[in-house]
Image (cartoon, rainbow, N blue to C red; front, top):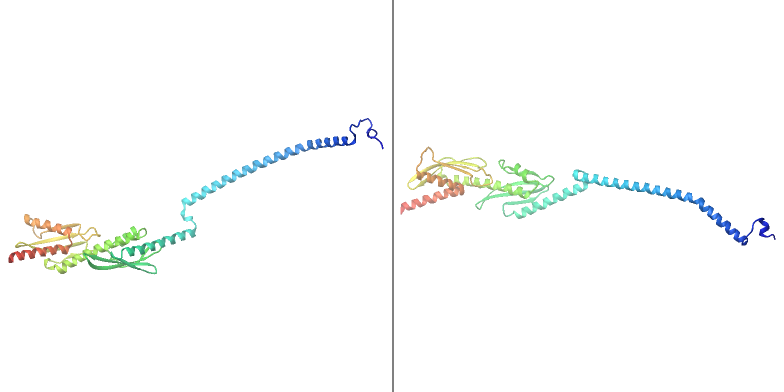
Length: 302
């Protein structure tokens, strides 16, 4: 076998063949590393560029999401009409159910004060009973359709009662207030009419002419006579009811027909009559005149 020096003439083989191979391997490794370094740097640069692009895309998406949220928020605030139709239907249904419950509660609460009613296929028919000084008078009804909006289907309210005005003010927002206001007008009208009827039927002896009145009984005009002492005084009275929710007049004028100048005694009677008409129901005033006449008659007998 030839030696290593024979295979590589002019070179000294230190450490033998194995050592020489190791040196060759190490040299190859160093050469490979040097050749790989540019490739690694290129890859790192490419990755950094990719990272910057992804970061830019992320920031852009975040800005778009923020803008969309702002637009949606503005649309919700500016236009409730663009809400989900199913949610709107549910909301209206809940509102109608609430109004049904309110009407039932009102009828239960007021059944002893002139209001009663029964449920119908449309809603509720409310009966409004009137009374004055313990006497039951006329009854009226109003048929309500509980829907959106609430409406009056039918009624028996007199034409001079401002039903439309009361409905506009309260029917859609407060049914309880609507019914109570309507009851005030009807009860006051029934009270005024009752007083006028009582005057014509029970105290017609005091009247010296016909009682003049209009359908709402918001103005009454009549002449009457009253005995004071041994004298009979004649008076003309005009009672004006400007407040249609009141059964008492807001303005009273009492005069003596055909007489311009009057005595102090007559003036005293006139002023006292005006005060009575302002503060007491009409038939009660004439009842007091009857008692005064009875007292005078008794004093004459004694």
